[in-house]
Amino acid sequence: MPDDALPAAVPVTSRARLVRASWIALGAAMFVTLALRCAGLDHLPGINGDEAQYAVHALSFFDGASLADLRTGTNLPMNPPFFGVVLLLQALLPHTLLTLRLAALVHSLLAIGLAFGLFRRRGLGFAATFALLVACLPIHVGYARFAWDTAAIPTMMVLSLAAATRRKPLWAALACACASTEESAALAAPDRAVFDTKVWPILVRDCGFSECHGNEPRFFRVVGPGHVRLDVATRPTDPVTPAELQFSYDRARSMLNAADANESLLLLKPLEVAAGGSGHEGTDSFGRNVYRTLDDPNFQTLVRWAMGAQ
Image (cartoon, rainbow, N blue to C red):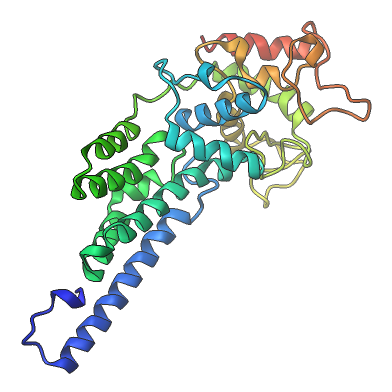
């Protein structure tokens, strides 16, 4: 209960106790909501198509693509407030799923901070209660765990409310416009059986080393026997598990472009630049990429699988 909302008739001692108890309750609730936002953020829940879209576009931007050429699944420009944070974090930190989702977490924490700071003039109790409301709404907690543009909605809505209460309608309208989103992007769904029997063996052999894409911090990962295992209790020589195949399939298809398979990072990254690839840090000691020509039979297997996603 905010101190400025207590009846004046409440005795001073009781008033102090209520104020102290209310702030303890607010602090505890805030701690719980922050814990729910952060716990297992690097793997819970699994990656989805919307998140993969932002990761792919961020990597494309760093490879030289123009912002004007980066479009959403419905051919709209990327959401500026969210994609800007994605680009900043991807430029400063390793390209991992955790880094990608930190953009959503940053927006969520920013919304809470703005809810308190921008409404502090209405009283400490009001600002704290409003910030807690923003923090506790289940949908806002959910947005903080997914790297998609809806994560920017709480931030933009708080800014819009602050502008409206200050009688600045143009700023309020601008904030609302920046909060707009569009329908989810389609995630490629290529043949799972072909992946299990033909694609996964190639990926785990060529890319699944512990220092490469078996490495846990990597955004794209592939796991299995003889390399990194999904469960540390699984022995290196044990057969591939259903969970490992599902995990590898989800990560591989997140690197596909459902609109144009030829633009998939799964195909462009491991291919030699001279053959049309986009560049890749995983070259050998001679600077050669995984696949040096378009005719490489293993590369062609990946191509045929990716084309099946269209």
